[in-house]
View (tube, one colour):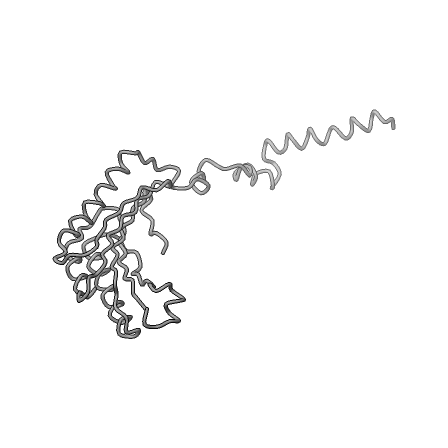
Length: 207
């Protein structure tokens, strides 16, 4: 048989395979036709597309959210009956999230547990926001702890949704943790922080 004939013979099966694959006569062809190629299928597009990419957040929405968080913490700040160093800070981040913090430095003679009771009634829930209350301590009487934590370690409560029930629970948990730490380490809480966080996806923030 001539070389030219061999080329024609090799070409025939390819044409026949293509015809059978299009009709779905072969077992494997039918399965491949249903599942599609390795490219992203239309139905499964959400598996490869993150939720954040679909959510559009405008600058106005971020400003309004930041304003809500600021006003919530400022109202709580005004309700504190004793003087001292207090500050409300709000940051709109590049990843389109908003963080707000009320930082209260406790004056001498004022316990953090008293402040938790006051703030628990004053911090209003903000839709879509998360809350975490924290305490900072001074361990200057123990040199090893002072060197390790730079004099001010911190305990914080897990993030919870900013609902009325969760706000109260967060302050109650912070109070119990602070009491235990103060008793165990014989060190007083010197600063209380109320942290609020908002993100467009509504996801729980990392610690």
